[in-house]
Length: 114
Ligand code: DGP
Image (cartoon, rainbow, N blue to C red; front, side):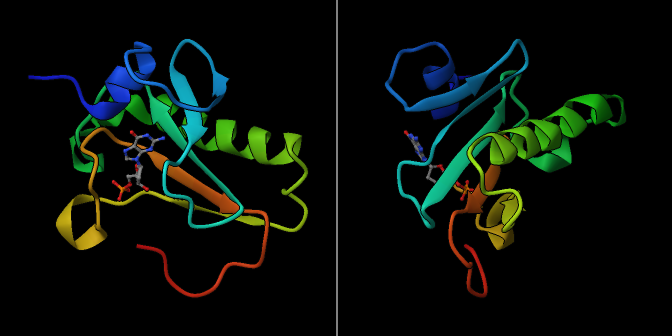
């Protein structure tokens, strides 16, 4: 299977504005921001969609949430609030098939997010 665009970012084969990284997770600014803060939290190990994540990866999913929470606190948007979104497959509007969670914030967010 060829690398996803996010695997290329993880391997530094294409540039990204990386804001957080540890052994399991990388976070970088979305190329097409939908809010003043729009960061993608991405597990380094690839699962194409949320449907492909097995039961024994609960810790990874939890750590993805906690990484976003910690980052939101670190940049001062946690108190006002933010939105976390994971899109799955076509009805969810998923366009990159390497699971990722959107952190959106920095201003009041209106209705939907696609
Ligand atoms: P989704 O619809 O949930 O699959 O969102 C994929 C997001 O990935 C979309 O908001 C745009 C972002 N994106 C796609 N390609 C790149 C890229 O090369 N660099 C960065 N930083 N973001 C990307």
